[in-house]
Image (cartoon, rainbow, N blue to C red; front, side, top):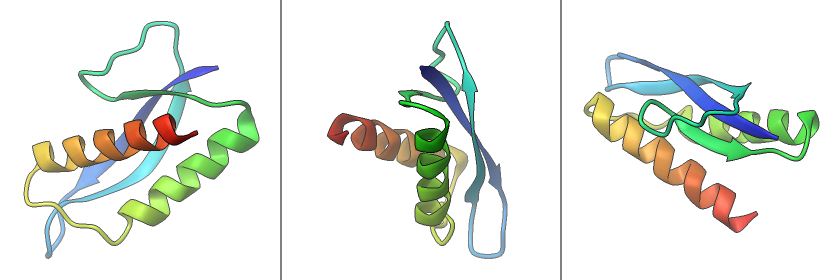
Length: 82
């Protein structure tokens, strides 16, 4: 099933952080405001979201565009390797 991936970008003392990753089923992908990824099932989706949280939890970004581009590149690379 195809999902639209979203997340929250919040300011912090050391820069912007990305967290609260979520996946919403979609029939109309919007790669301008998020990332589209396919998951095999609920367990696969939850495992991936947890992995994204763990990877991006300690990372900090200087601006929102950098954060968005980094998450998008990581997710697309992750999807391509599957």
